[in-house]
Image 1 (cartoon, rainbow, N blue to C red):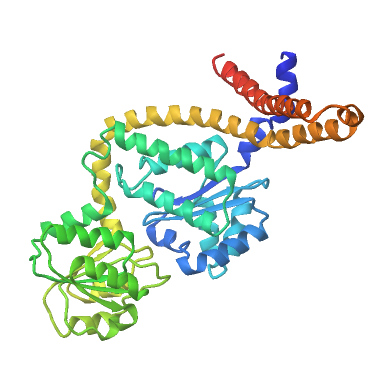
Image 2 (cartoon, rainbow, N blue to C red):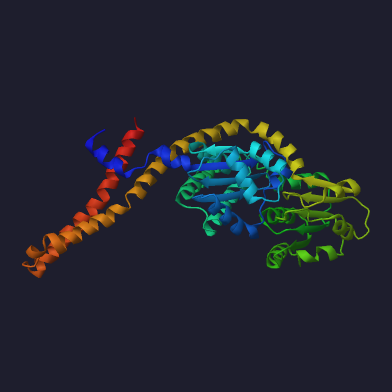
Length: 428
């Protein structure tokens, strides 16, 4: 190590010390049933309080919560060791209603990633390689949304910010430079194709329960293909009105679902309810005495339709589980593109190492400008006070300009030197 490298090293935290604080805890369709994953769902209106409390209780520096139709993930920055025992305590604290068997099962089946592996996993998720439906663009918006929510709730910080920024940029490259999404097979398109295969008439009465992203995409997709009769229910009535307006349909508050008397042919439901929203009683009232076969596209986790309805009524139930079986076939046909994507992701992992090192340097050197200013002021006001009192105003102005110039150079030079050393080490 040269003297210059030795001097700069005091500003930089060792790479493995900082990035190893990053953990990702994933509960996915790969090793858990969707009903099990649904037990980890936190309704949007409850997230801030519950996640803030868990962050404080476990002394977590940063936290991000991601929930989709087939995964729940926690990204943490903490100095604690995250292992199975930690997960048991974490799940117990965040989900106190779960019984001991559920907690143990979830903790044992969680997939944990740390440091660089956590970054690699997030890249895989946002690029849809780890998704139930490979090539599904929706996941990039879900990852971005999870980060925006964590930032608004003041849960995340600098490390998660740079990880997610790099993750989103990489995912955009994947979708632009590969054909993984040329024939997208998202949950929405899979559900639509399933509906189309059943030859459902275009004038069918469609009841939409929930006005979130998934249902919005699904309903607009249906409108685009010729469906015209929409009734939209949502807990927040203004969102129901907005979607209904786009569809030229009718909006209702969710509380009015039990009294809806116009009948239906298709229900499309995807809400954030913690339990089955469509009970046997509600479903019976919605039928209005009709006996013909109905279609329920249930994209919620946990599912909105009470399972007993499927057994008792004349209904075609299209669930996330059904769509997963279809998506598994798509995965096989996309193996060639996945290899191309993985090449991009490997490069992105290496790029992040350098991004993180540069960020460490920036953070460590934040104090340099303040220190330089203090030295300059001390020199003017104390060390050379007497000498400066004897010079004229014009000379003093020139001296101030010279010192200002030197100050800027002294603030920028260490950063340039550090980046030069970083680039030099990268090429070795």
